[in-house]
Length: 230
Image (cartoon, rainbow, N blue to C red):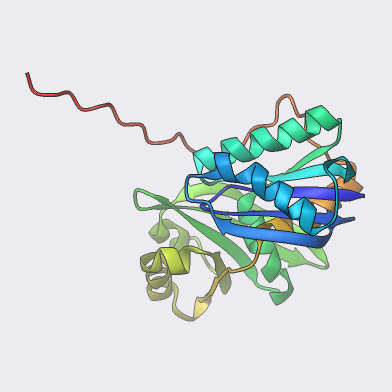
């Protein structure tokens, strides 16, 4: 069985091909806002690297967000297209969970952080508890100050925010001191998506292709066009 994992939830897009959740080929690139034109050609390139054909894909996984509105739209449209046209199962996994899971073995509370602008962050909370990976707090938008106020135990904060939004990492460190462990993620999220997605498949979980939607958390900022002077 071969699976295709698609993560276009942020400017750093990634895709992976796996067999029973074990990655055989993966790719990451800085897509910026070019997900629409770059995703399919890169999937074709990845299939060539793995010496595989499109018909070899028997399941598709997609990162459901939160993240880039354009990126999520493209990723979901592509994943749904594969699932519908090939009659294969579709599984979605939250982007914040993909950021958190590689740190499961630390035994710490793991809080992935995503800068969503306007002085706010998207966060959730996870922990490996007696060998079972659990979500303790669902994805939501908050401020750094509110996040730190709610943090009572030593917590690992992860994601790409510490590089891209160093002010957030600095503020968390200032407010929490030794209670905060800050890690910058540099791995391919699609590889993590392949593993977690396959586990869901094994448990019989799959999305309704007709109704599944990305997790945006809030509406995009839309500004009215400026009027010219009369």
